[in-house]
Image 1 (cartoon, rainbow, N blue to C red):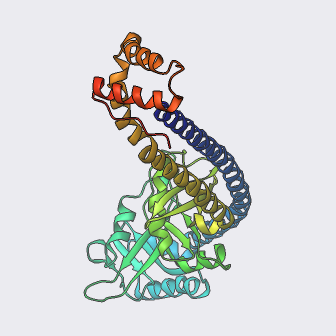
Image 2: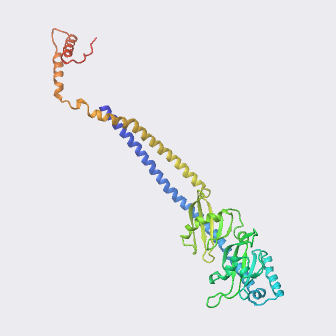
Amino acid sequence: MNRGLHIGRAGGVTVSRILFWLAITMALLLIFLMLFNTFESITLRAIQKSYTEFAHHTATISDSMQSIVRALGTQIYYISSTTRLRTAQTLSTYDRIYAMREIGQYVSSSPMLQSIYVFNDATKSVYSTDELFFNTDYDHFGDREAVRLHLERGVDSSMRLSYRLIEAPGLLPAARLSYALMVFEVSPAGQPLAGSILLNLDPRWFREQLLDFPGDSYIVLDRDGHTIAQQAPWLSEAATVFMPLIDASGIGDSLDGYVSATYEGEKYLCFYASRANSGWLHLRIMRQADQLPGLARIRLAVFLVFGGIAFLLLLALAFSFMRIYAPFSRIKPNCCKAPWRKMRPRDHLPPLTGWTVCLLPRKSKSFKQRFRICSAAKQRQTGGCPLPRFS
């Protein structure tokens, strides 16, 4: 019984020590995670600040580009040839050819222009420098999206870039991306005046001016979320994952920050910056493991070390339970039911008294002889096992 109690106490001490070290391990792991998250946040903030400065520099370039595009659109809108095409109710063949040739010179001399459309509301006609679309009326002009932009134009759409896909007419497979800049006048009452021009701008020019440097993680979006320029095709799809998170920050104001999300099964970071005057949003999207390789390795190493320690402690706890607690739990009920726990002290007195009487010294016999006699007598009286004989 004493040995069983000793085993139980020893098992309790062992399990308590294992639980103590397991608690210490988990506390150290929690402290490390808190410090790691703090350091990671500080590092990302430093990267975000660096990117914000770069993005504002790029935004300054984009503002200059938009100013150049608007200045070019205004210049083309007010030249005599364009004025004649968009306002004349009757136009001779010579005047039309001369005007189209002058407008075509702007297209051929400007790397940003793909083509120019001139809309005449008096005759419901469209004059185009694009080789895919011929001069005709509104109803038969091949670029239906351009006609829709002209007919649905409002005050806010003047001098504003809009992303669109120019589809080829008929069965021609050609199609190209473009940015449309609509130029028209507005009356004092806030209504668009008759006639307008539409400049189709080449997206490659924006990319060369904004993102002509090594890398594959930068993308520029307009206020509607359409791509202005990007360094890799996959960025447009990835940007759609981050835009809802960025919209929650209040896009449209001057803002900057970063968000994280899962894209194609991996954790990605998106640093963003925007300026209120242009409305363009500058993004940098990259894998978190590539941005913080050292921190990722440190975190993995610490998780492996603490995970190994916790596993060994749990293994020791399971071993202690199987080798100490489980056997002791089976022994304990038997110990509680032992017959000597129900015996009274006086039940032992007769045998002890008898042995005491037999072992009293006598003069006629030696000690060994007297012990043998008493042993035989007791065996006959109690039916017990004989005591070992002395040699």
